[in-house]
Amino acid sequence: MGNSAIGKKYVPASESRVYAIAALGQGLVYSCMSSYVTDFYMNVLALDAMFVIMLMLLARVWDAINDPLMGIIVDRHKTRRGRLRPYPVATCIPIAILTVLMFTKHLFGHDFSAGGVGNYVFVAVIYVIWGMVYTSSDVPFWSMPNLMTPNHKERAKIASYGRTVGGVGSAVTVALPYILGFIPALVSRQDFNDIKYPIMAISMAALGMPLFALSSFKVKERIDVPNATKRNPDEPSALNRIFHCKPLLLVVLAGILSFGRYMLQAAAPHVARYAGFYIGIDPATATLQQLNSNISKVGMIIQIATAIGMFGSMLVLPKLYEKFEYRTLMIGSCLGGAVAGVLALLVGWFTKNLFLCIPMFFIMSIPLGVINVVSGIMVFDCLDYMEYKTGYRDNALGSACQSFVNKLGNAFATVSIIAMYIVAHIDVKMLNAGPEKALELAKNLGPTQNFAMYSLVTLVPAVSLLLTAVPLFFYNYIGDKKKNVIAELAEMRRARGIKVEED
Image (cartoon, rainbow, N blue to C red; front, side, top):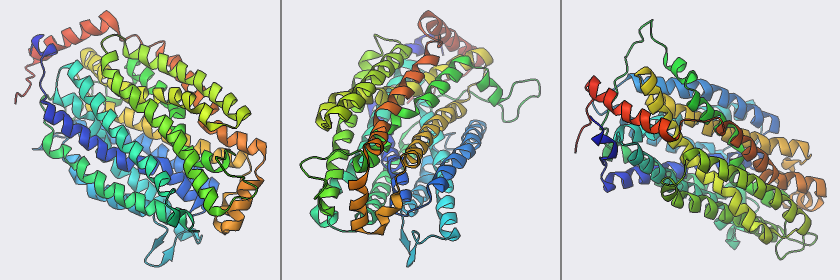
């Protein structure tokens, strides 16, 4: 495989589309969990806030072990169907079942909101197992572009396309509860939250997982850089290679610091309920139906602005790759998003007009699209650099780093939401005490509590994005250095007899 392989296209358009459709299916289910599990746990099951915090943190500690372990397992084992392809189809049904169970309040006549140790154990076990099974499919799935083509530009486009279409799945899940909120027959019911989450979980799992499984049958692994099944004592371990790859560590650090990018989606339902924005109603005389409808309107405004900014950036990214370094795109979007977050905080708080904040929400969500896509492509580039330096390519372990960062970011976002409830002294258990108590809670929140909740989608993301840009200034795998490594890596592969399978 000589330098001619660098510019050659290997993947037909139909295969790229299948990979993107599979990402869409995965996005439907993952967003179902990440965007609403906190709201379901606290406002439907009425779980103790400290329990939810500890569950999220401990589950992420386990992920810190589970993700790299899964990456190592995938890199060291190859089946007759390939290294990566078996996992999506093997995990799609378990993930679907666990997703439905995660959003279950009543099962075989049992009410999981009734309290008791057994209910807490059930919730914790389902949540942790869901994360483990999801990891066993997520790590190999997002590693696939590495084996689909040796062309780094084609690889970037496939990954970008997949992330973009996968983001559409996230948007569908995010919008669905708000759409349900506009149905009068539902918003007038006391158990609206009890209904909307099972509907969402069942529909997203039933639609998403069959689409996700397509990648096991329609995606082709064309290149395989062999890794030893057992490590020679004189050679560095896979984890050692990761920790000595400076560009990769900087990308991972930036990803961890960017947890605030998830707040616009994850915190939207909480902000819609408690931030004190009202559209066309008087909170002093509002009925429960009017309150639920207002929550849907406020949440929808935030989510639509977020979706437009996120998908708009994703759609234009392939054009920008030719003009700007990945690092430049990341830094520029983060700094712009941070400024927009501060402006949204000031404008929204002093005017109480959410419509005036739409342009700021739009700009703030641009980094959400850029980081989701570009950071993954940068990880692929870092794996090129690692292979150039060591002769090994830990594809799945590298993707596990990205997977871990995404989960850790979602966990930090979730913990930030719950922590804000505690700091603002908002008793969410009142929501489960009947419609009168829910109305009383919404009407009696003070300005400080409203401000605290609104800061979840403004100040917290702004600070997070500002911090994200810092490690990226030290990322230097760009320009001529990157071009030289790519060219020399192609020659190294040719010398090792590594061939690319043709269609």
